Image 1 (cartoon, protein in one colour):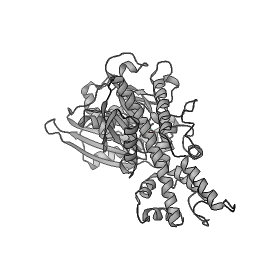
Image 2: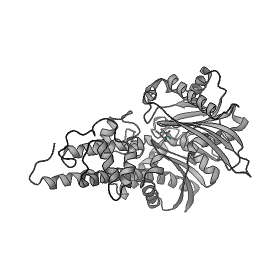
Image 3: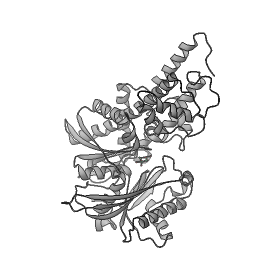
Image 4: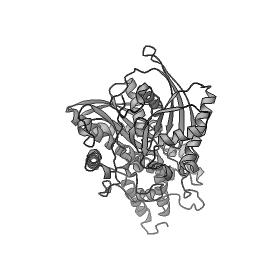
Length: 466
Ligand code: BGC
């Protein structure tokens, strides 16, 4: 309903400013986020509290990173979002230094994300069979499995699913070993000869693939449909594990930050975040992730625009629009809208999809809303990254730390502003860390092939990798 006071224009403008300011974060607020995330990370590492801690800090049992020393051909399966990929990776000898990758991407139909484990894994195995046939691969190749959900690693090739995130919700898989589910699907399709040798998270794949080329890389970050980070932690800081020597890669699962009863993100979660969360697949879960990653940023923008329309601040006079149909405003529109600097043609064509007006002032306001949502997402991601970096710097007792961050994900690589805001904010929040971002293309996938290569013949019965 439009506001009808005589000072209506001013009131509407004030309301627009109020809404945009909900997405503004001061440096002080970002520091608070850092402190609270740090506390949650410590809870996830501690023997006494880890079982209840939402930021799970999952040990991966990976104790060292590759340094350009693998050989041979491997398959990789990368499952984690709306698409999954199958890859064949051929590592050359160290002197050749050439890696050859062939890959195919498959879309996971929405209904399979809510189906049964058997239906999902049968579909995946069908696609792998198609890939092998298209690529004329006849010899049995070891397969590395990138599985981008929270799971408990209990061996190189065993991962117990803790819960689904993003658009997936297949209850009969939770608590089961997903490698076993994949193997059973392979067996059901009798003619396939595939050996699953390792399972890793996508952050770990990204870290592996970047570390392979840059030994200074000890952090793997994903900002795509979901978000997460892994890093090399000192064993002596992993209270919940025995042993004090060396390092181990920890999959933080930071997307769940904000879930704990203390509600550590309560001061910055606003009315639009709450609404978007309620409409989501997993309400009350993955609070940090929902404010940062691609899964719901479009939906967040959509909710703000609907509210502004209701208040008469935008699209006035248009009744027959399509903005309120569920799930239409895709996150990729944010990228297109924000890259439109001049004639606003992208903004106009996107708004036309929703039967919405192309008035210049409306287009500019849509842009402002997208910019506010993106900026906050990138700043929160930076606060998270700065927390991890500062923790690593402290552990090394260094005044100044140099670190390469392996990064992957559509928001980082495709959005016109996200990476710049992320990088600038990290510099600001962690000034004693000199960071170098390394964009890993397909790394989460071929990192699994790398992990498979590194396990070599040792994988049977081993609980520690490398
Ligand atoms: C999952 C993580 C994953 C991240 C990025 C999150 O929803 O819980 O395991 O690394 O998405 O794909």
